Structures are given as C-alpha cells and as structure tokens.
View 1 (cartoon, helix red, strand yellow):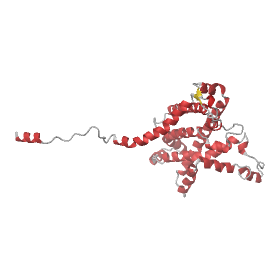
View 2: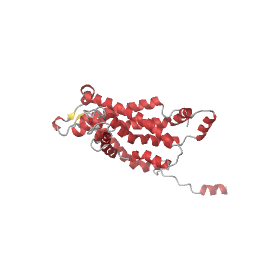
View 3: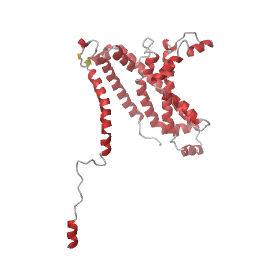
View 4: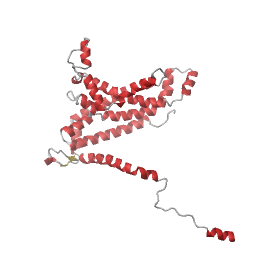
Length: 312
C-alpha cells in the first residue's frame, strides 16, 4: 500500500504542447520561405502568360486592348503559316541537335572513361565548352564565321571557296553552320552525364563477360547501354527541351535568317513580343509551345519506360 501511494504521489510527466513544431515538420517549416518565394517567381509569370493569352494586349495600340477569348489561338492554327513553319523547323532543329550531341557525347564519355596519360587534362578540355555561356558561345562562332577574318577567309587562302563567303547568309549552309556551333557547347553536357553513370558500372560485369567470350561490341550492347538507359533518356529529354527553347545562339548567329530559314518557335515568340509588342498573341504562342512540350515529354517518358527495368 505504501509503494502504491508513493507511485501515486509522483508528478505526471509534462505534456507536449500541441502548438510546438515536431521534428518531422521542422524541415518543411525551414524551407517554407524559400519555397514560397520560388512559387511566387514561377507561378506568377506562368499565370500571367495564360491570362494574357486570352487578351489583345499591345502597349503601342492601347485602343485595341481587351478580352479576346480564344481568338489568338484560332489565329495561330488557321491564319498564321509562320507558326507552322517555325514549329517544323524547331522539330528539325531538336532532332538533329539532340541526336548528334548524344552520339558524340557518348563517344567522348567512352573515350575519357579509359585510363590514359593526361586523362584529367583531357576531361577538362572536353568539358570546358559547357562552362561557356550561350551568349559568349555565340560571339565566338560569329567571329569564326566572319567572312573577312574567320574560317572562310583561311579556306579561301588555301584555294577552297571564295573570298567574302558567309556561311550564315547562305540558305544552303546556314543550318549546318548553326548546328556545328551548338554542337560545340552541347556535346559536353551528354559527355558529363554519361561519364558519371559509366563510372558506376561494376568492372566485374566486364570481366565476367570476357570470361564468357563476349567481345567489346557485345559488352557495349548488353552491359553498357542497358546501364546507361535512364541517363540517356533523362539527358535527351532535358536537352530536347533546352534546344526547343534555344534563342540566344540562333538570335546572335542568324537572327532567324536568312529569309526566316533558322527561325524557331521561341525565336518567333521573342520577335512577336519584343519587336512587334504583341504580347497577347506572343503569350498565346507561348501557351501552345508549353502544351506541345508537355505532351511530347509525357509521351517520350511513357514510350521510353524511364525508370523501369535496367541492370543497375
């Protein structure tokens, strides 16, 4: 009885106040301010684009401003042939650029993954173009393609071509010239991601394959490529979105010319908004481009089975 009375007299443990932050909620509370700021900076521009896409908004012609409904979208699909031309060129640009960048990036990653003298210097040289900004890359290639002091001048000195030739002003050479300029900066992106994934492949797999008599080609097809599947899918998707939205390089190199031969849809949107001041129609074009990218990304991830399977 005495022991029971002593236990009964012991003070009850303090209760945790309901308003106190639990350890499980604390990380979310700490990142909440940054998250709200990011949401504001992202959500407001996106919602503004959707809003202005339903408006006639041109600061230089305020008497025409007002609610337009879906007139801008109707005009895009029925009255604007330049939209279809720029969309087709954007698709061509993305397919060619991403395909070539993936091929050369994979080759470079396989090369610098080998052991050789000066490998660190070789990797630094391979990856250095990716550290250069898009505007600076454009400036470098503008100088290289200059008809007076660039590549064509030295080729003409060797008897190849004529003096004063400009690859960027010729409709037959402007596309390959722009592709080469963007390859210089885009290939290291694939090389970096693929090399990082290559270094996680177990060497025991290759040793076992050699014991079984598998050659280099079979090892590449049955060990390397399956391991790189997700890295290739993710890098191609990211690069495709970036190439679709490529404005700085093409704007600096060609300005969309000659004769609109290198005008992508984002460049057409930039010209419509900045030069023509037609922000309502440009917002509608941006909304259409967003839907196209979203749809293509979802289809690509579904068909490629990203994250499914793999031999990692």
